[in-house]
Length: 172
Image (cartoon, rainbow, N blue to C red; front, top):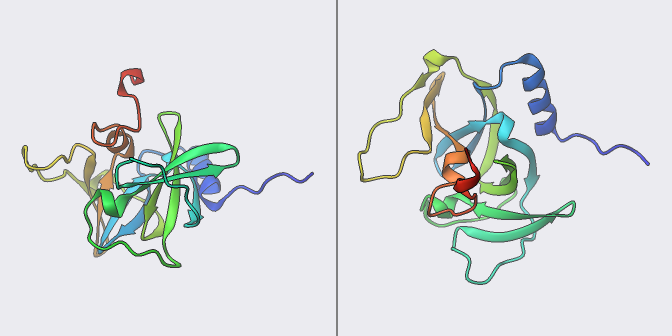
């Protein structure tokens, strides 16, 4: 029996760990017209968007679940979560499988761009929107050439009250 092949994202994450440059490496992806980044070590794999089993009475942004090698994985459509208008699924739509606080989950995005390394000078603090917007999950804004990236702490986002996907009482 042959060994399963590591996905590109697993290989990237493993090499990031080996190189010791983990905190500033981000997987970048598109949602609508914006580009986002999340810490590469949270990424387990990247998959094409395919059949999802819908769950009755789940919030609209939770598309349903998939069976990933025996693990039932909730799938969150980030475009619906962030109110980005009409959601269309095409050949570029992907699911990023994440491991967040020991829980496996997937997020649907418009497409994955690349893995980038940002220096501290390339990351600016997120603007303060006071109480009007919940932006606790935004680490900051990264700049690469002419690109502006919204860097997110996916763990904070997934453990927020409205998401309810991670039991925050078990974290610290």
